[in-house]
Image (cartoon, rainbow, N blue to C red; front, side):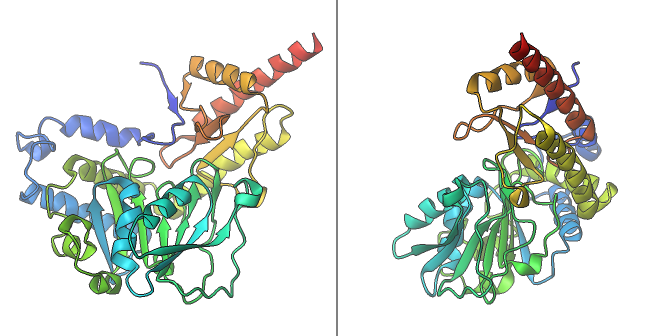
Length: 365
């Protein structure tokens, strides 16, 4: 079997040890004679899976007791609607930090809800989203909460620290760098993240929400209500059992690796190695402002679409897959999630050096 390095932005690479454990347990989970995909979500087997997964996630992120943890479906995109319905209930207004495509999608979904207005409190539009917008520390907005996308997978930008928006409740979309970079949960009223980047397979969304916000939420249809989902421990209906099981294994794996701080250290080392090469290269370049660069998603370009395609072909031939950039920006993108190994970054750089050298020879010739 070929040793493939998967740079995909999501669904993304998972730890090999986790996949091997899934394979080992696939036909009979804990000698039950049933696969995890066959056990009842009301069974003690699954209750233990979910309990352990939540406990380990709380340990990894230092989640305080006053926050509830939900394992939901619908992807992070559903949270673009659920958060406004549950939280924008007093002033009926939301502040958004506009950092690119996914924050814009969140804005669009919020605008579809009758009676809720949105306000862009800061935007990176002037830099074509290659730089994070500056947020005034003294900002005081008459809103229910402020929405921030912590890491922007398409644009390759990320907030290294939570914006200091005093006196405001922050809702953070942490889909692409959750567990890969340390944040203080208490800086947020709510955090949400799709699983398919740093947690596990697609189909699961993690929501971490302060309990007082849950209690204040209005009466809503059951599957859109944080209050009702908390009361039923995420099992109002059949939850994504297999995805929660896999996420639980990833949480266990992360604990054995040293937790979030150890992963952030590794992620910084992986990202810095690639950024150092890009900054020294005469062919490839990073389009992102240095101070705004993501540790997780690193777009890069040659400045020539034909050359970009030639490089992607060479990369695929060398078992470096998933490097094609998002359709909105083109070029290439290396997604270096927790499970992505340093060896893959080194091989990518070796292939880039080879391509750059061949390009120079063609220019001279």
